Length: 246
Image 1 (cartoon, rainbow, N blue to C red):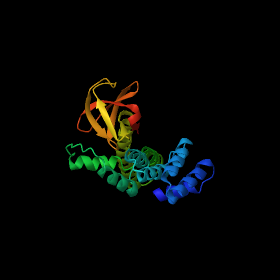
Image 2 (image 1 turned 90 degrees about the vertical axis):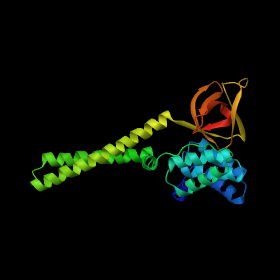
Image 3 (image 1 turned 30 degrees about the vertical axis):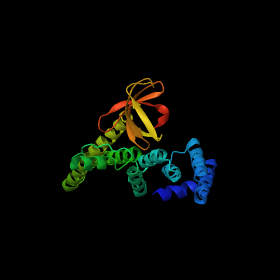
Image 4 (image 1 turned 60 degrees about the horizontal axis):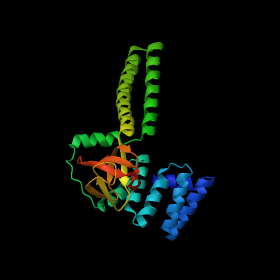
């Protein structure tokens, strides 16, 4: 799917596609710094596309900018959550992260449920909900307004009930994703080594240290600082310029 998006963007018209093509050429030449600069130029033009983020992450990774690479692969993953290339690259990059935060694994049913909920993007699931809503209304309308046989009426009612169940499931999943997107803010550490302090200011004590590529939860901000937490519950404050918020 990444390559399909790549081709669509590369064959388009206008400044973004031209810049994207130049970036691809620089990448193939091995000038990854120039490719990174050009890909970021495409993003600055307002292009919000998985192929751009994916290629930009690759260019950063080639320059050993692990934090930046993980950040842009994560952005690509949010656009194409099931793409195997993005998943494989993130898994490889995560093996290179210095920090290892041990947390208890969720039960298998919870992991399956989480994977199912995040199988589609918000836009894709919104389209599914709209289609199911339309089918449900059409089935109910035909059921109650037409003069079909009893068997046909029963079939229509059973279809409407089945669609209603699916609609409830997808609507619930969509609602959870929207809530999660608005309430759960994450960021990636992009500096090689970052001190997490007890308060928003360098005069505060360093409580622990994290390294580039670490995915952290952003819970608040004050001035030039973010209040963050790790999956194991550790929390503190970090300077904003050391973290890229997703």
